[in-house]
Image 1 (tube, chains in turn yellow, brown):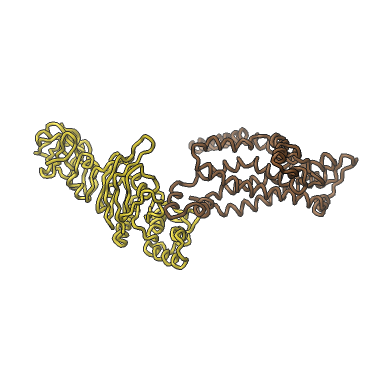
Image 2 (image 1 turned 45 degrees about the vertical axis):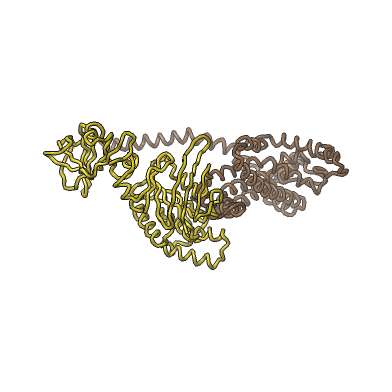
Length: 332
Length: 303
Protein backbone atom coordinates (compact mmCIF):
# COMPACT_ATOMS: atom_id res chain seq x y z
CA UNK A 1 0.00 0.00 0.00
CA UNK A 2 2.41 2.69 -1.09
CA UNK A 3 3.28 2.36 -4.76
CA UNK A 4 3.94 5.76 -6.27
CA UNK A 5 4.13 6.43 -9.99
CA UNK A 6 5.05 9.67 -11.69
CA UNK A 7 4.03 10.03 -15.34
CA UNK A 8 5.41 12.84 -17.53
CA UNK A 9 5.32 15.07 -14.47
CA UNK A 10 6.33 18.67 -15.13
CA UNK A 11 6.49 21.79 -13.01
CA UNK A 12 7.02 25.38 -14.09
CA UNK A 13 6.89 28.59 -12.11
CA UNK A 14 5.84 31.18 -14.71
CA UNK A 15 8.29 30.89 -17.57
CA UNK A 16 10.85 29.01 -15.49
CA UNK A 17 10.68 25.25 -15.87
CA UNK A 18 11.91 23.48 -12.75
CA UNK A 19 11.02 19.93 -13.76
CA UNK A 20 10.87 19.39 -17.54
CA UNK A 21 9.39 15.88 -17.44
CA UNK A 22 9.83 13.04 -15.01
CA UNK A 23 8.76 9.40 -15.09
CA UNK A 24 9.44 7.32 -12.02
CA UNK A 25 8.07 4.22 -10.32
CA UNK A 26 8.53 3.73 -6.59
CA UNK A 27 7.58 0.31 -5.25
CA UNK A 28 5.58 -0.36 -2.13
CA UNK A 29 7.84 -0.40 0.92
CA UNK A 30 10.85 0.99 -0.89
CA UNK A 31 13.21 3.56 0.64
CA UNK A 32 13.99 5.96 -2.20
CA UNK A 33 16.32 8.92 -1.81
CA UNK A 34 16.20 11.94 -4.10
CA UNK A 35 19.65 13.44 -4.24
CA UNK A 36 21.18 16.25 -6.22
CA UNK A 37 22.79 19.67 -5.93
CA UNK A 38 20.92 22.74 -4.64
CA UNK A 39 18.23 23.89 -7.06
CA UNK A 40 18.02 20.56 -8.90
CA UNK A 41 14.30 20.25 -8.16
CA UNK A 42 14.39 17.44 -5.61
CA UNK A 43 12.35 19.29 -2.98
CA UNK A 44 9.93 20.53 -5.65
CA UNK A 45 9.43 16.94 -6.79
CA UNK A 46 8.70 15.84 -3.22
CA UNK A 47 6.27 18.74 -2.74
CA UNK A 48 4.51 17.78 -5.98
CA UNK A 49 4.04 14.26 -4.64
CA UNK A 50 2.82 15.68 -1.31
CA UNK A 51 0.38 17.99 -3.07
CA UNK A 52 1.92 21.16 -1.70
CA UNK A 53 2.69 22.24 -5.27
CA UNK A 54 0.36 21.68 -8.19
CA UNK A 55 1.75 19.91 -11.23
CA UNK A 56 1.93 21.89 -14.46
CA UNK A 57 1.21 18.69 -16.40
CA UNK A 58 1.52 14.95 -16.01
CA UNK A 59 0.13 12.60 -13.39
CA UNK A 60 0.88 11.33 -9.91
CA UNK A 61 -0.53 7.93 -9.03
CA UNK A 62 -0.61 6.42 -5.55
CA UNK A 63 -1.52 2.73 -5.55
CA UNK A 64 -2.86 3.20 -9.05
CA UNK A 65 -5.16 6.08 -8.06
CA UNK A 66 -4.59 9.40 -9.83
CA UNK A 67 -4.08 11.97 -7.07
CA UNK A 68 -2.63 14.76 -9.23
CA UNK A 69 -5.35 17.25 -8.32
CA UNK A 70 -6.25 15.88 -4.89
CA UNK A 71 -5.68 17.89 -1.72
CA UNK A 72 -2.60 16.90 0.33
CA UNK A 73 -4.63 15.41 3.17
CA UNK A 74 -6.51 13.07 0.82
CA UNK A 75 -3.34 11.55 -0.61
CA UNK A 76 -2.71 9.52 2.56
CA UNK A 77 0.88 10.70 2.75
CA UNK A 78 2.80 12.04 5.72
CA UNK A 79 5.60 14.54 5.50
CA UNK A 80 8.50 15.39 7.78
CA UNK A 81 10.00 18.82 7.22
CA UNK A 82 13.54 20.12 7.61
CA UNK A 83 12.36 22.67 10.19
CA UNK A 84 10.22 19.98 11.93
CA UNK A 85 7.11 22.18 11.43
CA UNK A 86 5.74 21.28 14.85
CA UNK A 87 2.83 23.28 16.20
CA UNK A 88 4.55 25.36 18.90
CA UNK A 89 1.40 25.99 20.93
CA UNK A 90 0.61 22.30 21.32
CA UNK A 91 2.19 19.69 23.57
CA UNK A 92 4.04 16.73 22.09
CA UNK A 93 0.95 14.56 22.60
CA UNK A 94 -1.29 17.14 20.92
CA UNK A 95 1.14 17.47 18.01
CA UNK A 96 1.19 13.72 17.41
CA UNK A 97 -2.58 13.48 17.85
CA UNK A 98 -3.39 16.38 15.54
CA UNK A 99 -3.78 14.51 12.22
CA UNK A 100 -5.95 11.90 13.97
CA UNK A 101 -8.09 14.61 15.52
CA UNK A 102 -8.54 16.19 12.09
CA UNK A 103 -9.53 12.79 10.71
CA UNK A 104 -12.26 12.64 13.35
CA UNK A 105 -10.98 9.54 15.17
CA UNK A 106 -12.39 8.87 18.61
CA UNK A 107 -10.36 10.12 21.61
CA UNK A 108 -9.61 6.63 22.99
CA UNK A 109 -8.10 5.47 19.70
CA UNK A 110 -6.14 8.72 19.42
CA UNK A 111 -4.77 8.28 22.93
CA UNK A 112 -3.70 4.69 22.26
CA UNK A 113 -2.03 5.55 18.94
CA UNK A 114 -0.20 8.53 20.43
CA UNK A 115 1.15 6.35 23.25
CA UNK A 116 2.23 3.65 20.79
CA UNK A 117 4.05 6.18 18.62
CA UNK A 118 5.66 7.79 21.66
CA UNK A 119 6.91 4.41 22.85
CA UNK A 120 8.44 3.56 19.46
CA UNK A 121 10.16 6.96 19.34
CA UNK A 122 11.23 7.17 23.01
CA UNK A 123 9.02 10.16 23.64
CA UNK A 124 6.87 8.72 26.42
CA UNK A 125 8.34 11.02 29.07
CA UNK A 126 8.01 14.14 26.94
CA UNK A 127 4.35 13.92 25.94
CA UNK A 128 3.26 16.93 28.01
CA UNK A 129 6.12 19.18 26.91
CA UNK A 130 5.93 21.83 24.23
CA UNK A 131 8.25 21.69 21.17
CA UNK A 132 10.17 24.70 22.49
CA UNK A 133 11.27 22.62 25.50
CA UNK A 134 12.76 19.81 23.38
CA UNK A 135 16.15 19.29 21.72
CA UNK A 136 16.48 19.20 17.92
CA UNK A 137 16.56 15.41 17.83
CA UNK A 138 13.50 15.11 20.06
CA UNK A 139 11.63 17.61 17.91
CA UNK A 140 12.40 15.62 14.81
CA UNK A 141 11.16 12.49 16.56
CA UNK A 142 7.89 14.26 17.37
CA UNK A 143 7.58 15.21 13.69
CA UNK A 144 8.14 11.56 12.76
CA UNK A 145 5.61 10.53 15.43
CA UNK A 146 3.03 12.86 13.92
CA UNK A 147 3.72 11.17 10.58
CA UNK A 148 3.54 7.54 11.73
CA UNK A 149 0.27 7.76 13.68
CA UNK A 150 -1.59 8.42 10.46
CA UNK A 151 -0.39 5.08 9.05
CA UNK A 152 0.17 6.74 5.68
CA UNK A 153 0.71 5.04 2.35
CA UNK A 154 4.13 6.67 2.20
CA UNK A 155 6.38 8.95 4.21
CA UNK A 156 7.97 11.98 2.63
CA UNK A 157 11.10 13.41 4.27
CA UNK A 158 12.38 16.81 3.15
CA UNK A 159 15.99 17.07 4.36
CA UNK A 160 14.87 16.11 7.88
CA UNK A 161 18.34 15.94 9.41
CA UNK A 162 19.85 19.13 8.01
CA UNK A 163 19.22 21.15 11.16
CA UNK A 164 20.90 18.63 13.46
CA UNK A 165 24.54 18.44 14.49
CA UNK A 166 26.77 15.74 12.99
CA UNK A 167 26.50 13.28 15.88
CA UNK A 168 22.72 13.55 16.18
CA UNK A 169 22.43 13.30 12.42
CA UNK A 170 24.12 9.92 12.35
CA UNK A 171 21.96 8.68 15.26
CA UNK A 172 18.75 9.86 13.60
CA UNK A 173 19.89 8.34 10.30
CA UNK A 174 20.01 4.95 11.96
CA UNK A 175 16.70 5.51 13.71
CA UNK A 176 14.93 6.38 10.46
CA UNK A 177 16.45 3.30 8.77
CA UNK A 178 15.27 1.12 11.67
CA UNK A 179 11.85 2.74 11.51
CA UNK A 180 11.69 1.81 7.83
CA UNK A 181 12.56 -1.78 8.64
CA UNK A 182 9.93 -1.79 11.38
CA UNK A 183 7.10 -0.10 9.47
CA UNK A 184 7.91 -1.50 6.04
CA UNK A 185 6.28 1.55 4.43
CA UNK A 186 7.35 3.46 1.35
CA UNK A 187 9.67 6.31 2.22
CA UNK A 188 10.86 9.08 -0.08
CA UNK A 189 13.72 11.03 1.36
CA UNK A 190 15.22 14.23 -0.04
CA UNK A 191 18.77 15.14 0.84
CA UNK A 192 21.85 16.78 -0.55
CA UNK A 193 24.00 14.70 1.80
CA UNK A 194 25.23 11.70 -0.11
CA UNK A 195 26.25 9.86 3.06
CA UNK A 196 22.55 9.83 4.01
CA UNK A 197 21.67 8.76 0.48
CA UNK A 198 24.24 5.96 0.34
CA UNK A 199 23.54 4.57 3.81
CA UNK A 200 19.74 4.71 3.88
CA UNK A 201 18.46 4.16 0.37
CA UNK A 202 17.20 1.04 -1.33
CA UNK A 203 17.38 3.13 -4.48
CA UNK A 204 18.83 6.55 -5.17
CA UNK A 205 17.38 8.94 -7.72
CA UNK A 206 20.06 11.39 -8.84
CA UNK A 207 18.52 14.63 -10.06
CA UNK A 208 20.10 17.44 -12.02
CA UNK A 209 18.30 20.51 -13.37
CA UNK A 210 14.92 18.81 -12.87
CA UNK A 211 15.74 15.66 -14.77
CA UNK A 212 16.67 12.20 -13.54
CA UNK A 213 20.29 11.43 -14.33
CA UNK A 214 20.23 7.88 -12.97
CA UNK A 215 18.21 5.62 -10.71
CA UNK A 216 19.78 2.68 -8.96
CA UNK A 217 20.97 1.12 -5.75
CA UNK A 218 23.73 3.00 -3.91
CA UNK A 219 26.43 0.53 -4.99
CA UNK A 220 25.14 0.44 -8.55
CA UNK A 221 25.53 4.22 -8.78
CA UNK A 222 28.92 4.08 -7.14
CA UNK A 223 30.22 1.27 -9.33
CA UNK A 224 28.53 2.06 -12.63
CA UNK A 225 27.67 5.75 -12.92
CA UNK A 226 25.88 6.41 -16.17
CA UNK A 227 27.50 9.75 -16.85
CA UNK A 228 30.00 12.35 -15.65
CA UNK A 229 27.42 14.09 -13.43
CA UNK A 230 26.51 10.96 -11.45
CA UNK A 231 30.16 9.89 -11.32
CA UNK A 232 31.11 13.25 -9.86
CA UNK A 233 28.17 13.50 -7.51
CA UNK A 234 28.19 10.04 -5.95
CA UNK A 235 31.24 9.18 -3.85
CA UNK A 236 33.19 11.09 -1.28
CA UNK A 237 35.83 12.34 -1.87
CA UNK A 238 34.76 13.05 -5.43
CA UNK A 239 35.94 11.05 -8.40
CA UNK A 240 39.01 12.45 -10.24
CA UNK A 241 38.42 13.29 -13.91
CA UNK A 242 41.32 13.34 -16.34
CA UNK A 243 41.39 14.38 -19.97
CA UNK A 244 44.17 14.58 -22.54
CA UNK A 245 46.93 12.01 -22.74
CA UNK A 246 45.69 9.91 -19.80
CA UNK A 247 42.23 9.62 -21.41
CA UNK A 248 43.53 9.23 -24.98
CA UNK A 249 45.58 6.25 -23.89
CA UNK A 250 42.29 4.54 -22.90
CA UNK A 251 40.44 5.77 -26.03
CA UNK A 252 38.07 7.98 -24.01
CA UNK A 253 37.31 11.71 -23.95
CA UNK A 254 37.49 11.69 -20.16
CA UNK A 255 38.41 9.07 -17.62
CA UNK A 256 37.31 8.97 -14.01
CA UNK A 257 39.11 7.33 -11.10
CA UNK A 258 37.90 7.37 -7.52
CA UNK A 259 40.50 8.50 -4.95
CA UNK A 260 40.32 5.10 -3.23
CA UNK A 261 41.16 3.29 -6.47
CA UNK A 262 44.59 4.86 -6.97
CA UNK A 263 47.76 3.16 -5.81
CA UNK A 264 50.62 5.31 -4.53
CA UNK A 265 54.33 4.60 -4.67
CA UNK A 266 57.51 6.53 -4.02
CA UNK A 267 59.39 4.98 -6.95
CA UNK A 268 57.16 3.84 -9.76
CA UNK A 269 53.74 4.58 -11.30
CA UNK A 270 51.74 5.86 -14.26
CA UNK A 271 51.37 9.49 -13.15
CA UNK A 272 54.10 11.44 -11.44
CA UNK A 273 53.30 14.32 -9.14
CA UNK A 274 54.17 16.29 -6.06
CA UNK A 275 52.06 16.25 -2.89
CA UNK A 276 50.33 19.63 -2.47
CA UNK A 277 48.62 18.75 0.79
CA UNK A 278 48.39 15.68 2.99
CA UNK A 279 45.45 15.24 5.37
CA UNK A 280 46.10 12.52 7.95
CA UNK A 281 42.81 11.38 9.46
CA UNK A 282 44.19 8.35 11.30
CA UNK A 283 42.20 5.70 9.43
CA UNK A 284 42.80 7.35 6.05
CA UNK A 285 45.17 9.81 4.47
CA UNK A 286 43.91 12.18 1.79
CA UNK A 287 46.60 13.41 -0.58
CA UNK A 288 46.21 16.20 -3.11
CA UNK A 289 48.81 15.48 -5.75
CA UNK A 290 49.71 18.00 -8.45
CA UNK A 291 50.48 16.11 -11.67
CA UNK A 292 50.84 17.00 -15.33
CA UNK A 293 47.20 15.89 -15.74
CA UNK A 294 45.93 18.21 -13.06
CA UNK A 295 45.39 17.78 -9.33
CA UNK A 296 44.53 14.21 -8.38
CA UNK A 297 43.00 13.35 -5.01
CA UNK A 298 44.12 10.08 -3.51
CA UNK A 299 42.70 8.20 -0.56
CA UNK A 300 45.50 6.14 0.95
CA UNK A 301 45.68 4.13 4.16
CA UNK A 302 46.32 5.89 7.41
CA UNK A 303 49.84 4.52 7.79
CA UNK A 304 51.35 6.32 4.82
CA UNK A 305 53.66 9.16 5.88
CA UNK A 306 53.76 11.23 2.70
CA UNK A 307 54.10 14.95 3.35
CA UNK A 308 53.70 18.17 1.40
CA UNK A 309 56.37 18.50 -1.30
CA UNK A 310 57.10 14.76 -1.62
CA UNK A 311 57.39 13.34 -5.13
CA UNK A 312 54.98 10.40 -5.58
CA UNK A 313 53.84 8.07 -8.36
CA UNK A 314 50.18 7.18 -8.85
CA UNK A 315 48.67 4.17 -10.60
CA UNK A 316 44.90 3.66 -11.08
CA UNK A 317 43.39 0.22 -10.60
CA UNK A 318 42.80 -0.80 -14.21
CA UNK A 319 39.33 -2.31 -13.76
CA UNK A 320 38.15 0.68 -11.71
CA UNK A 321 38.80 3.32 -14.36
CA UNK A 322 35.52 4.80 -15.72
CA UNK A 323 35.53 5.90 -19.34
CA UNK A 324 33.30 8.67 -20.72
CA UNK A 325 32.69 9.79 -24.31
CA UNK A 326 32.63 13.35 -25.60
CA UNK A 327 29.05 13.84 -24.36
CA UNK A 328 29.93 12.68 -20.88
CA UNK A 329 28.25 9.27 -21.16
CA UNK A 330 29.93 6.24 -19.64
CA UNK A 331 31.00 3.38 -21.89
CA UNK A 332 33.17 0.29 -21.84
CA UNK B 1 53.17 50.30 36.39
CA UNK B 2 50.50 48.01 34.84
CA UNK B 3 48.30 48.72 37.91
CA UNK B 4 48.45 52.47 37.10
CA UNK B 5 47.58 51.87 33.45
CA UNK B 6 44.64 49.68 34.41
CA UNK B 7 43.34 52.32 36.88
CA UNK B 8 43.62 55.05 34.25
CA UNK B 9 41.70 52.89 31.77
CA UNK B 10 38.97 52.28 34.33
CA UNK B 11 38.63 56.01 35.05
CA UNK B 12 38.57 56.85 31.34
CA UNK B 13 35.88 54.20 30.76
CA UNK B 14 33.79 55.60 33.65
CA UNK B 15 34.01 59.11 32.13
CA UNK B 16 33.15 57.68 28.74
CA UNK B 17 30.05 55.91 30.15
CA UNK B 18 28.99 59.05 32.02
CA UNK B 19 29.38 61.09 28.81
CA UNK B 20 27.26 58.58 26.85
CA UNK B 21 24.62 58.68 29.57
CA UNK B 22 24.53 62.47 29.49
CA UNK B 23 24.30 62.63 25.70
CA UNK B 24 21.88 59.82 24.97
CA UNK B 25 19.76 59.28 28.07
CA UNK B 26 19.43 62.59 29.92
CA UNK B 27 17.69 64.56 27.10
CA UNK B 28 15.07 61.87 26.55
CA UNK B 29 14.40 61.32 30.22
CA UNK B 30 14.16 65.08 30.81
CA UNK B 31 11.66 65.61 28.00
CA UNK B 32 9.63 62.58 29.13
CA UNK B 33 9.62 63.78 32.71
CA UNK B 34 8.64 67.32 31.71
CA UNK B 35 5.85 66.56 29.26
CA UNK B 36 4.48 63.23 30.53
CA UNK B 37 5.45 62.40 34.07
CA UNK B 38 5.17 65.88 35.62
CA UNK B 39 1.67 66.59 34.17
CA UNK B 40 0.44 63.21 35.42
CA UNK B 41 1.76 63.92 38.91
CA UNK B 42 0.31 67.44 38.78
CA UNK B 43 -3.09 66.13 37.69
CA UNK B 44 -3.07 63.52 40.45
CA UNK B 45 -2.25 66.27 42.94
CA UNK B 46 -5.02 68.58 41.66
CA UNK B 47 -7.37 65.63 41.98
CA UNK B 48 -6.75 65.67 45.69
CA UNK B 49 -7.90 69.32 45.96
CA UNK B 50 -11.14 71.18 45.51
CA UNK B 51 -9.65 73.54 42.89
CA UNK B 52 -12.32 75.42 40.96
CA UNK B 53 -11.96 78.55 38.83
CA UNK B 54 -14.73 80.35 40.74
CA UNK B 55 -13.41 79.38 44.20
CA UNK B 56 -10.92 81.85 45.67
CA UNK B 57 -9.09 79.35 47.85
CA UNK B 58 -8.02 75.82 46.96
CA UNK B 59 -7.96 73.27 49.76
CA UNK B 60 -6.54 69.75 50.03
CA UNK B 61 -9.54 67.40 50.28
CA UNK B 62 -7.80 64.02 50.22
CA UNK B 63 -9.78 61.32 48.46
CA UNK B 64 -13.09 63.22 48.62
CA UNK B 65 -13.25 63.72 44.84
CA UNK B 66 -12.59 60.02 44.22
CA UNK B 67 -15.25 58.96 46.74
CA UNK B 68 -17.77 61.36 45.20
CA UNK B 69 -16.97 59.94 41.75
CA UNK B 70 -17.44 56.36 42.87
CA UNK B 71 -20.89 57.23 44.26
CA UNK B 72 -21.95 59.38 41.31
CA UNK B 73 -24.64 57.95 39.01
CA UNK B 74 -23.48 60.31 36.24
CA UNK B 75 -19.98 58.89 36.45
CA UNK B 76 -21.40 55.35 36.44
CA UNK B 77 -23.33 56.12 33.24
CA UNK B 78 -20.23 57.61 31.65
CA UNK B 79 -18.16 54.58 32.70
CA UNK B 80 -20.75 52.21 31.21
CA UNK B 81 -20.69 54.16 27.91
CA UNK B 82 -16.90 53.98 27.84
CA UNK B 83 -16.88 50.25 28.58
CA UNK B 84 -19.49 49.58 25.85
CA UNK B 85 -17.46 51.55 23.29
CA UNK B 86 -14.28 49.76 24.39
CA UNK B 87 -15.87 46.31 24.11
CA UNK B 88 -17.34 47.03 20.67
CA UNK B 89 -14.07 48.50 19.42
CA UNK B 90 -11.89 45.67 20.79
CA UNK B 91 -14.16 42.83 19.66
CA UNK B 92 -15.30 44.38 16.37
CA UNK B 93 -11.89 45.58 15.24
CA UNK B 94 -10.23 42.28 16.11
CA UNK B 95 -12.82 40.19 14.26
CA UNK B 96 -12.84 42.43 11.17
CA UNK B 97 -9.07 42.96 11.33
CA UNK B 98 -8.17 39.27 11.31
CA UNK B 99 -10.82 38.52 8.66
CA UNK B 100 -9.55 41.21 6.31
CA UNK B 101 -5.92 40.22 6.94
CA UNK B 102 -6.74 36.62 5.99
CA UNK B 103 -8.52 37.78 2.82
CA UNK B 104 -5.67 40.12 1.89
CA UNK B 105 -3.22 37.27 2.28
CA UNK B 106 -5.19 35.21 -0.22
CA UNK B 107 -5.39 37.98 -2.83
CA UNK B 108 -1.68 38.52 -3.34
CA UNK B 109 -1.91 40.84 -6.35
CA UNK B 110 -4.12 43.33 -4.56
CA UNK B 111 -2.21 42.90 -1.30
CA UNK B 112 -0.07 46.05 -1.34
CA UNK B 113 -2.72 48.39 -2.72
CA UNK B 114 -5.47 47.23 -0.38
CA UNK B 115 -3.18 47.23 2.62
CA UNK B 116 -2.57 50.94 2.02
CA UNK B 117 -6.27 51.60 1.50
CA UNK B 118 -7.15 49.99 4.83
CA UNK B 119 -4.43 51.95 6.61
CA UNK B 120 -5.55 55.39 5.34
CA UNK B 121 -8.15 56.01 8.12
CA UNK B 122 -5.45 55.41 10.74
CA UNK B 123 -3.34 58.30 9.48
CA UNK B 124 -6.30 60.64 9.13
CA UNK B 125 -7.09 62.96 12.01
CA UNK B 126 -9.93 61.70 14.18
CA UNK B 127 -11.59 65.09 13.75
CA UNK B 128 -11.44 64.86 9.94
CA UNK B 129 -12.83 61.33 10.01
CA UNK B 130 -15.60 62.39 12.36
CA UNK B 131 -16.56 65.39 10.21
CA UNK B 132 -16.82 63.12 7.15
CA UNK B 133 -18.89 60.51 8.99
CA UNK B 134 -21.08 63.19 10.56
CA UNK B 135 -21.96 64.56 7.14
CA UNK B 136 -22.94 61.01 6.10
CA UNK B 137 -24.89 60.08 9.22
CA UNK B 138 -26.82 63.19 10.28
CA UNK B 139 -30.59 62.95 9.81
CA UNK B 140 -30.54 64.64 6.40
CA UNK B 141 -27.13 63.23 5.49
CA UNK B 142 -26.16 61.08 2.52
CA UNK B 143 -27.05 57.74 4.14
CA UNK B 144 -30.57 58.67 5.21
CA UNK B 145 -31.25 60.53 1.96
CA UNK B 146 -30.27 57.37 0.10
CA UNK B 147 -32.42 55.20 2.39
CA UNK B 148 -35.38 57.54 1.84
CA UNK B 149 -34.89 57.32 -1.92
CA UNK B 150 -35.27 53.54 -1.51
CA UNK B 151 -38.64 54.08 0.17
CA UNK B 152 -37.60 53.89 3.83
CA UNK B 153 -39.63 56.75 5.21
CA UNK B 154 -38.21 56.86 8.75
CA UNK B 155 -34.57 55.86 8.61
CA UNK B 156 -32.73 55.53 11.92
CA UNK B 157 -31.33 58.64 13.58
CA UNK B 158 -27.79 57.32 13.53
CA UNK B 159 -26.42 60.14 15.67
CA UNK B 160 -29.65 61.63 17.04
CA UNK B 161 -31.35 58.55 18.50
CA UNK B 162 -30.01 57.95 22.04
CA UNK B 163 -30.44 54.18 21.67
CA UNK B 164 -28.35 54.04 18.48
CA UNK B 165 -25.82 56.89 18.72
CA UNK B 166 -23.39 55.06 20.99
CA UNK B 167 -23.20 52.15 18.53
CA UNK B 168 -22.80 54.48 15.56
CA UNK B 169 -19.89 56.22 17.27
CA UNK B 170 -18.36 52.85 18.17
CA UNK B 171 -18.70 51.71 14.56
CA UNK B 172 -16.87 54.79 13.32
CA UNK B 173 -14.03 54.20 15.79
CA UNK B 174 -13.85 50.56 14.62
CA UNK B 175 -13.65 51.82 11.03
CA UNK B 176 -10.81 54.17 11.91
CA UNK B 177 -8.81 51.65 13.92
CA UNK B 178 -9.33 48.77 11.50
CA UNK B 179 -6.27 49.53 9.36
CA UNK B 180 -3.99 49.31 12.37
CA UNK B 181 -5.41 45.94 13.38
CA UNK B 182 -5.16 44.62 9.81
CA UNK B 183 -1.50 45.60 9.53
CA UNK B 184 -0.67 43.97 12.87
CA UNK B 185 -2.48 40.76 11.86
CA UNK B 186 -0.79 40.76 8.45
CA UNK B 187 2.58 40.99 10.20
CA UNK B 188 1.51 38.14 12.48
CA UNK B 189 0.44 36.00 9.53
CA UNK B 190 3.72 36.70 7.76
CA UNK B 191 5.52 35.49 10.88
CA UNK B 192 3.89 32.04 10.84
CA UNK B 193 6.40 29.69 9.20
CA UNK B 194 5.18 28.39 5.85
CA UNK B 195 6.03 24.82 6.84
CA UNK B 196 3.59 24.92 9.74
CA UNK B 197 0.78 25.84 7.39
CA UNK B 198 1.87 23.10 5.01
CA UNK B 199 2.11 20.53 7.79
CA UNK B 200 -1.42 21.46 8.85
CA UNK B 201 -2.60 21.07 5.27
CA UNK B 202 -1.09 17.59 5.06
CA UNK B 203 -2.56 16.73 8.48
CA UNK B 204 -6.00 17.51 7.08
CA UNK B 205 -6.65 20.85 8.75
CA UNK B 206 -8.48 22.98 6.18
CA UNK B 207 -10.62 26.10 6.30
CA UNK B 208 -12.10 26.88 9.68
CA UNK B 209 -10.25 24.00 11.39
CA UNK B 210 -6.88 25.34 10.25
CA UNK B 211 -7.81 28.81 11.46
CA UNK B 212 -9.10 27.57 14.82
CA UNK B 213 -6.33 25.13 15.67
CA UNK B 214 -3.27 26.61 13.95
CA UNK B 215 -3.57 30.16 12.62
CA UNK B 216 -5.47 31.80 15.46
CA UNK B 217 -3.31 30.38 18.30
CA UNK B 218 -0.19 31.44 16.40
CA UNK B 219 -1.61 34.93 15.97
CA UNK B 220 -1.66 35.31 19.76
CA UNK B 221 1.06 38.03 19.82
CA UNK B 222 -0.85 40.08 17.21
CA UNK B 223 -4.07 39.62 19.18
CA UNK B 224 -2.33 40.81 22.34
CA UNK B 225 -0.94 43.95 20.67
CA UNK B 226 -4.24 44.78 18.99
CA UNK B 227 -6.36 44.16 22.06
CA UNK B 228 -4.21 46.25 24.40
CA UNK B 229 -3.74 49.10 21.91
CA UNK B 230 -7.43 49.17 20.95
CA UNK B 231 -8.51 48.98 24.57
CA UNK B 232 -6.37 51.94 25.55
CA UNK B 233 -7.39 53.98 22.49
CA UNK B 234 -11.10 53.28 22.89
CA UNK B 235 -11.08 53.90 26.63
CA UNK B 236 -9.75 57.43 26.22
CA UNK B 237 -11.76 58.37 23.12
CA UNK B 238 -12.67 62.06 22.98
CA UNK B 239 -12.31 63.60 19.50
CA UNK B 240 -14.94 61.50 17.73
CA UNK B 241 -17.48 62.09 20.52
CA UNK B 242 -16.85 65.85 20.50
CA UNK B 243 -17.37 66.16 16.74
CA UNK B 244 -20.06 63.53 16.13
CA UNK B 245 -22.46 63.97 19.07
CA UNK B 246 -20.92 66.36 21.57
CA UNK B 247 -21.72 63.77 24.21
CA UNK B 248 -25.41 63.62 23.30
CA UNK B 249 -28.03 63.08 22.16
CA UNK B 250 -30.10 63.69 25.29
CA UNK B 251 -28.31 63.61 28.59
CA UNK B 252 -24.97 62.10 27.82
CA UNK B 253 -25.98 59.12 25.61
CA UNK B 254 -22.47 59.01 24.17
CA UNK B 255 -20.48 60.77 26.89
CA UNK B 256 -17.26 58.94 27.68
CA UNK B 257 -14.91 59.46 30.61
CA UNK B 258 -12.46 61.52 28.57
CA UNK B 259 -15.28 63.70 27.23
CA UNK B 260 -16.65 64.16 30.75
CA UNK B 261 -13.18 65.11 32.04
CA UNK B 262 -12.89 67.90 29.46
CA UNK B 263 -16.46 69.04 30.06
CA UNK B 264 -15.99 69.13 33.85
CA UNK B 265 -12.64 70.90 33.64
CA UNK B 266 -13.35 73.49 30.98
CA UNK B 267 -17.14 73.96 30.90
CA UNK B 268 -17.97 73.46 34.56
CA UNK B 269 -14.47 74.68 35.48
CA UNK B 270 -14.12 72.13 38.33
CA UNK B 271 -10.42 71.34 37.89
CA UNK B 272 -10.10 69.27 41.08
CA UNK B 273 -13.04 66.98 40.31
CA UNK B 274 -12.00 66.63 36.64
CA UNK B 275 -8.44 65.78 37.64
CA UNK B 276 -9.70 63.07 39.98
CA UNK B 277 -11.77 61.68 37.10
CA UNK B 278 -8.68 61.72 34.86
CA UNK B 279 -6.70 60.03 37.63
CA UNK B 280 -9.35 57.34 37.99
CA UNK B 281 -9.38 56.82 34.23
CA UNK B 282 -5.60 56.38 34.28
CA UNK B 283 -5.85 53.87 37.12
CA UNK B 284 -8.61 51.88 35.37
CA UNK B 285 -6.67 51.79 32.06
CA UNK B 286 -3.44 50.82 33.82
CA UNK B 287 -5.06 47.97 35.78
CA UNK B 288 -7.19 46.71 32.89
CA UNK B 289 -4.37 46.77 30.34
CA UNK B 290 -1.94 45.07 32.74
CA UNK B 291 -4.44 42.30 33.50
CA UNK B 292 -5.34 41.81 29.84
CA UNK B 293 -1.69 41.89 28.79
CA UNK B 294 -0.74 39.24 31.36
CA UNK B 295 -3.68 37.01 30.48
CA UNK B 296 -3.05 37.22 26.75
CA UNK B 297 0.72 36.84 26.92
CA UNK B 298 0.20 33.46 28.59
CA UNK B 299 -1.24 32.23 25.27
CA UNK B 300 1.82 33.27 23.30
CA UNK B 301 4.45 30.69 22.33
CA UNK B 302 7.95 30.79 20.96
CA UNK B 303 8.96 28.78 17.90
